[in-house]
Length: 193
Image 1 (cartoon, one colour):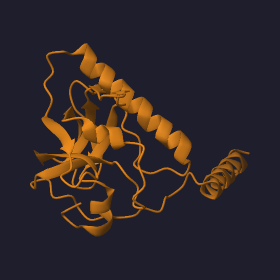
Image 2 (cartoon, helix red, strand yellow):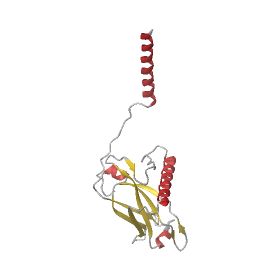
Image 3 (cartoon, rainbow, N blue to C red):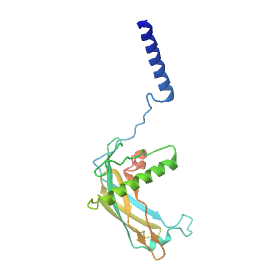
Image 4 (cartoon, rainbow, N blue to C red):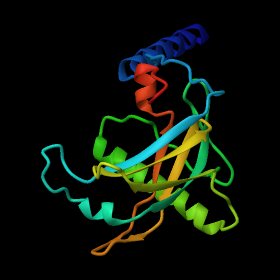
């Protein structure tokens, strides 16, 4: 009787393992990307084009009348050479979502929610200093506004731009998160990305 019970248990375990493999709980396929060089400083350029390529008036032409837009960058997470993010103080409770997802709408909403949470942490800690600053100014050719933050350590950054008043509109910018280096670096290993 004990031997039969043991055989039944083994059969059940084997069946359970087979079911788990079929439904995808078993081994997963992994993909490798080039390693991030953590010793190299990065830069981040923010820009908005004022006009579409067709030369017609763009929806952001009014932004070019603003002499400057100031922003602050907070490194909310460090990144390992393999691309894994780990939240930094005071953002320890912030969950950094995966960089890709099959459902773009819910993925975008999750990133917006995460950026809002990070901005709330900054607002709750007024003595917390930004890791970098950026000033966006009109491009010389009038094509938009741009600004570059240089000498950034690799990681995930929260970008907060100040509210700005043009002659026509008040602009309120939503905080956002950006990976430095970005995804194009991962795809091309081009250090200018």
